[in-house]
Length: 254
View (tube, rainbow, N blue to C red):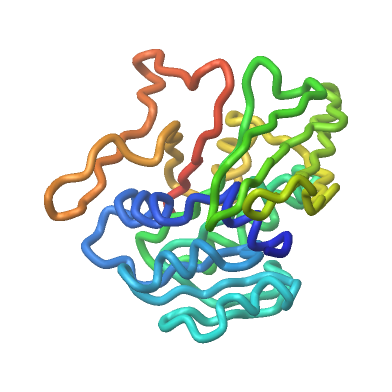
C-alpha cells in the first residue's frame, strides 16, 4: 500500500457518502457528480457504478490515476477554479474548503461552483468543530485491512482560534501478517487549513448566491428495501445542534 491506498482505507467512506448525496439531491436521477479536490477519486468511483457519471478534478495527476479504467468516471487534472465542467452535484469533502484562507477566496470559489451547477443542483462540503476543534491533539486507531494491521493517527499539530488556522497531519504504520516491523508513513499528508465554522460557511454560501443551506450531522438515518437512504437536516429552528465533537455536511442549493 502507498499513502493514497492508506488514505482510502482509513479516512474515506465513499459508498455511504455517494448514497447520501444522491438522497439529498432529491430527484430520481441526478446524473452527474463532480468531485472537487478529488485526490484518488474514491467518491467518483463509488458514485459511477450506481448513480451515473462522475468527474474527478484535482491538480495532482498521481492520485487521479487510480480512476483509470473505471466506467463512468473521467478525470481532469486542473485547478478547481479553472474547471468549468457543469454537474448536478459538486462535492468538496474531507475538508478542502480549508484551503481557502480568506473569506474573499472562499466566496469566489462558491460563486464559481454555483455557476457550474445544473438547475436544481447542490453543492456539498464538510467541516469539523466542537469543544476541542482548536486544541492540539492526536487520535490514533488500529484497523485491519486486506490482511494488514494499520495504525492510523490524525494529528492536529497547531491550532489558533483567533485566526481559524489549523495545521493537521496524517500518519500511518503498517504491519504485514505477523511481522513485528512496521512500514512507517510519517506526515503522509499535511494540511494548512482555515477551519470554517458552520455559520461562516452558511453566510459565505448565501453571499455566493445559493438559495438555501441545510446542515446534516449524519449521512443517513435508514435505508429501505429499495436501497433508498433517508436523510434529515438538523432542525435548527427547534434547537437541534451537532454533538460536542462533530463532522457535518453543509448542503447549498442553487
